[in-house]
Picture 1 (tube, protein in one colour):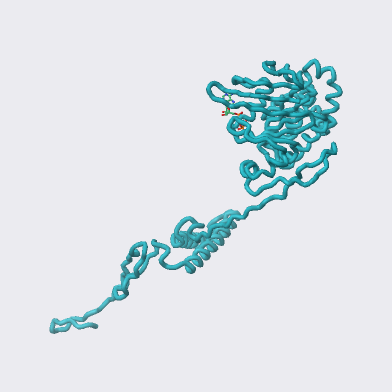
Picture 2 (picture 1 turned 30 degrees about the vertical axis):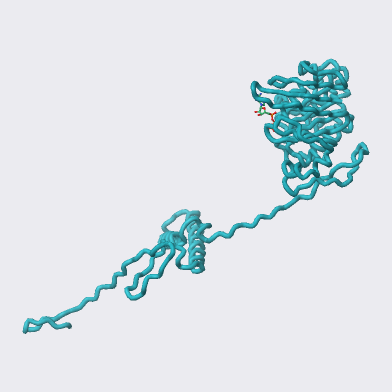
Length: 382
Ligand code: ATP
């Protein structure tokens, strides 16, 4: 069993862990949930001996202290880490990556059996042993990273956000793989943002909030805790706790919940909101462009493609014009301030809440009157 007591860590003056206490038994999956910056990665790095900050507290594996040991000594003792971002060697083959995981003397003794066990667990890695690691998909690279950690024959396997960047299908596969790791009797300490899926496979969980452990419970109880649901699962979302038998025959396992669909009403928008301007302006532009386009005979353009494009544009412009005209008819006249109105001397101007409408002078066609001059010198209308 991995046991952590009074673990604190700080980067300079900045505390990242305060008095943390957790336990991970062999053959159990323990998940650490927490917001960004809560200290989750720092916890795993402190246990692995690779934390850049100052670490104090007690870390023991089966009663043996791991305090102050070098990272490789901690791996030799039986605690392996799959870091965030996987940390595989991209230019090496899958097999070379796996073999690097067995660098410790203890692991080297049983390198062949360990490799066989890993390849059995991840059949895809057996098929791809000679493939250059960086050419594999994200999910496959994650398998390489887990497989490499497994090559050290760990008692405790720690994973920092292994589902990051994986598709839902690959996540499902990854979490299934972790239940198989657990079935081998290995303790799994999992830091995850994917609370729903990690709680669904975990036995127990802790909430790490603002550098401190604030909650500890069985995964089933955490999944059903309203506070956890609100903070990590999304309000109204639940992890189903129906009975599902696992490969090692252990009891209650939460199953994947049905999706929750929230419908949000779409706000009503006016035609002018959609076109982003005044309908009158749009009608004017559309009519002008359409007229121009129609005026140009197709013969002016030599290429058939150009003619076809012009025809299509005309059709679209006509459609726009028709739609805009129809929208204008449906809309009350006072909506568009840019709409000009004719001032008739006799009709009183209508009142408008947005101010008086603009006035356009209407010029009448000049009447030509012809007069004839009489011999008397007087003019008379012809
Ligand atoms: P995330 O989910 O975003 O990865 P986290 O819970 O894993 O967050 P940590 O990476 O452990 O959080 O970081 C905890 C705090 O410690 C953060 O405020 C972070 O800025 C700080 N921190 C982490 N590593 C260092 C470092 N090497 N030097 C200085 N500060 C650090």
